[in-house]
Length: 458
Image 1 (cartoon, rainbow, N blue to C red):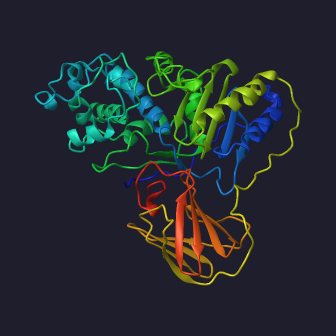
Image 2: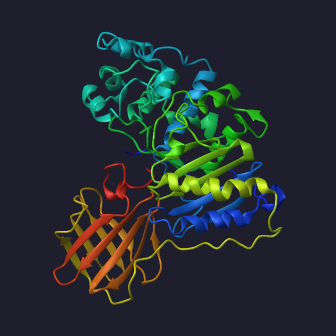
Image 3: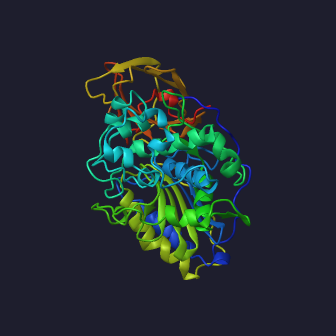
């Protein structure tokens, strides 16, 4: 999974005080405070926009404003944006069949429902399949998920049933590549990235060398906010209509009904956007969010390691949304404190250089060895060696795309490794008595990659 990444955001969003935009910043603080005690919520960054201005921003060290990160399924809304440009330029008709874009598959696709599946159906995760079909599609299409989607017969009439299904997004990306004759990145560069001043971005790639469209887009929190602002403004950016307003309206309304225990997941699904109880959202696993709130003329961009995504949204509606429309609050808010993410618990102590092997409690099978030097940690798996500095206890030490922290407790050394271009934290427990280690992910990565590749491709 390699790609040429692009670095350096070209233009920042304008900044303003909360009071100037009618925002009560104490509501932002209340939102952050309400999330703090939740056991499965860990914010990494937060940008709050009103009337097109950033009015509040928070960063949890070792995450930084210029750090890109994988956005997981928020990538789907970027793919939808590419589809919107293709529709606007007459390259794609939403009511054309998927198969019409791939006539070379015509003889192989025999199921009548598959043959009748339209572009709008896959855009709305309504291909007619009863559930996730990534594995079946991969096998059926010999690695080509778009072909595989058409070769796995749907259980329902396309357009009538919602099921979150990765090959739907992969199919949209394949269509955009087919009609444009270029990669998603090259297609989006003049249409989205350059106009919005998005310089730092990259994609994980699949086995065929194409962008991993459904989960692999990397960008900064500022880019998330810009995407949300473009949609909030109905496709207009700095006075120029980039996306048609009709596309924004269609992509962000409920195209198909959804059923889910969580209230913000049963409001319906658009074209690779979720409808929320308030507004709509682009969302990725573990709490990567672009929340678009037309009722408040606001956008909330977040990155996190938060499996409890509904819990985060509940607090947005309780604390942030009222603050965005109250029009009251302190005229000159106190400077935002930038807290550290939680550190390993324990005390400082001397570290003896040694190599550690997997112990019986190790849960990360691909990790074969952990090396300790006087001030360095190495991780050996089936990919390139990870080498990261290991600084004094009680603080994060950042090396390239890794941050480490350590502490001694009950005769064992606890080392946490944050992969700062992802949401993920690896927890290591090293036992000097027998030189074994146990490793566990605080929240496991979605992509099965070597540890050194858990970063934006360079």
